[in-house]
Image (tube, rainbow, N blue to C red; front, side):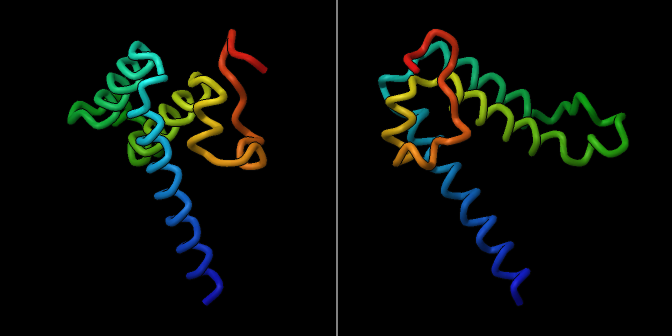
Length: 104
């Protein structure tokens, strides 16, 4: 029973993170170039041409892992103040660091 609730919590947090990334993507203060690179990466990840299908284990989970990596890099390179606004308190941002050249 506890495992069920842990899985439910995981899926809920994944949904919440995804919604925050989408809101961050729609924000006008985020660079259009960063949005374009992120969108292009997401299109490559969900395209029907599977680049890593020959690798036995990676072929099954590469799309999900690539989308998660793209979302994390997008958040990493966004301006820190905009990320903090969309993700809430600084306590929630302990693993999110500013991109190169951003205010620390």
